Length: 448
Image (cartoon, rainbow, N blue to C red; front, side, top):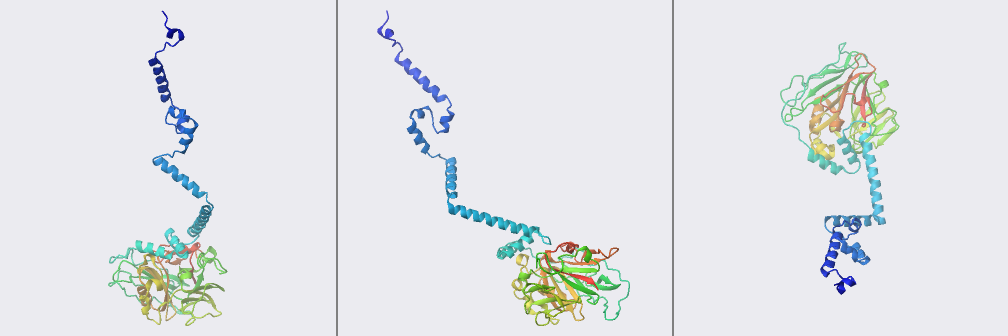
């Protein structure tokens, strides 16, 4: 007999209806809803809450590390949208472009100098000198005490085809007297002069090596003695210092100008820190300053050294003037000032040390030109070396290793293209340095 429930269709027990509902809910929970998860729903029940819950869920902030990153990026985006921030960022971008161009130009311009030295030069030219000095002070290594030189103090000599003799107004000199080593017992060849240049068969340039300290005995100074009666001296500009101008001479020794070339050597400090100026063929860089030590070049090819406006002056036959600091030998004596305020008075050195590469030039009482340069020298030792070589008036030229150079030239079988040789084997610059553009000014020495 059918019951009322069966007739009316209410035959499903209550527990069965609950089981079906639970099964559907369980299936819905296990089914992946990608769109729901992307919108932040945790399970299927969140969807049942409708639009109201979706709006609330949209306002929920992500939590944890990823949430902090998203919030940080949002703050940055909002900050960048502000006009004043965009102006600041634009100005900073322009500043970086200008600095990059300036540094790139300093690193790629023709001429001598390593990357670190060019960067240091650029920094000093742009008011970052104290920062450079501090960095060099940290990295400075003092010279090594004791020891012996890394090379023999002898070397090849040029061929002399006639005995030294006077011919008319030309004065011919034999080798200067041997120099006394300042390091004690001399090594073989030390202080003995050899011929580096010959003009018309007569020795025009003598050279030697000398140790200038009894403490730093492994360091050697190169010295050259040049006869102005057989040689003429020519000032040359640098591509960067003094830079472009109406100098009427190139910043190199091109092939057409190599015949008769006997020697080349470096100039002075950068003109902006030399305490004076640079004058060549009617054009000037900086300002010729009274009382500043000066090398003066004349039309007839000879040079003079003295204090500008006191012992040397501007005259119609002056074609060049190179000024640099103060005299370090005067009237045959070394002034006490060479030991005062070494860094401020005699130039900023690599590492702020007193003992660095230095160079200098002097004149003897009979008119010979003395050039000396070498590593681990203080100003007093450089002056002593020049005085020992016979200079009665002398001045310091450039300092620090990359700007030091003295080359002599052997014509061999190609007098129009002589072969250059470094006086010091351990100088940084190659022998043919001045056969291409030089960044600093220099002196070229020719046979008369």
